[in-house]
Image 1 (cartoon, rainbow, N blue to C red):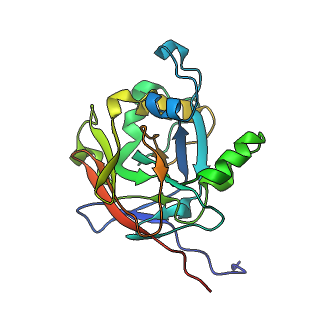
Image 2 (image 1 turned 45 degrees about the vertical axis):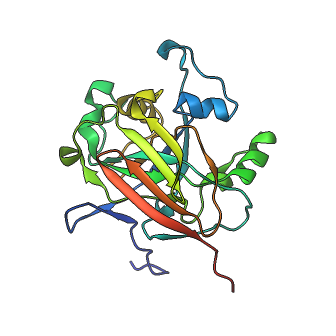
Length: 239
């Protein structure tokens, strides 16, 4: 049996320090996972871990990853926003059923730093009407990402800091200690909804300070002591 069209290439992220790549299966994203960001978006913030409720999830297509330094400004928006995030790469399939948080870290292959780019005007308009906001989050080049660093090299995440500078000015700066839902928490919750697979990427949420990007803006994202990624927002090509 043959394909009626040429199969698209498998999206892949390089693994730092090797000639290997990480083939991407799915991209899961966590919304409002830093209290300060939840506040700036007008959401309620839990008073304690017991009051957290359930996390907010959304997905981006696997081919939304952007490895290149030039990231095109997307169509259909006048309000593109940056959100710097820890990215967790899974190297093993989860067992069938709900994943025990105590076993969650055994699935983790490595870490990267990424940007959850957002067409904020489209997201806001959809939310105001009670509609899905996929168009605000899931688009071409919506997930710039660094090379993946194996967990064995990166070491413990601990209280490492996420930082994003735009044109040399710090816009976002937050400690992973402030995550409402930790990596084991998130993998446990995702396993209630999806069959987690090797090749999955999880964007873990962003600290406060999200804001607009314009063509010509240069970004530099850092996951302290582990990964960095830089790029420039460029005007979309005209036909």
